[in-house]
Image 1: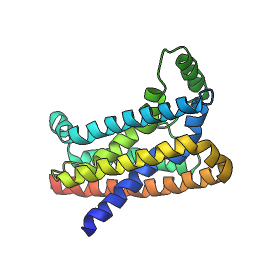
Image 2 (image 1 turned 60 degrees about the vertical axis):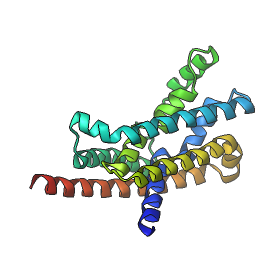
Image 3 (image 1 turned 90 degrees about the vertical axis):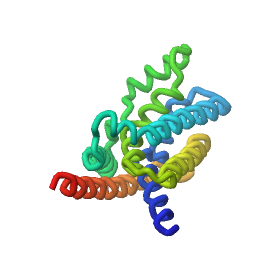
Length: 217
């Protein structure tokens, strides 16, 4: 039981760090500032539902994806670790990672398209790439790897579901939260999450190198 609790805590912290709902809240507010309170809640719910479905599909199908493309777990861990480390490093430096980055011009274009009913911002850019981007997918798949234990699948999916609920609350009440805590607090939390993410990424790389040495020795 203790190992499952430790695994669940690690999974949640890793997913929290890469998805970074606190830092994404201002983005959500900016994209939905012209919408009503009810519309914001609907957009938040749909974007997180889509993100949950996307990550869950990759978690469940990850084992088959490895087989189809001949991907080894060490290779995926090393690649995923490098990707996550870059995201974490940028977060520590106070920079916006390309994984999460949405330019001001893109935001304006997306808002205009949304107003003309040409695109639903709940799908893009919120669900993809902000919430369920390559970093989040890589993290979830890394935690599951090629495990055949149903418990690991349940823990990862349940952890992401809990994270989606927390993110929904932050999105809905985010404007009040940011006004209360201030942007400085959001910056501090974002950099702490970046440090945690970089450490987890380093551990993934170490595990991948160790696995590769065992695989090819």
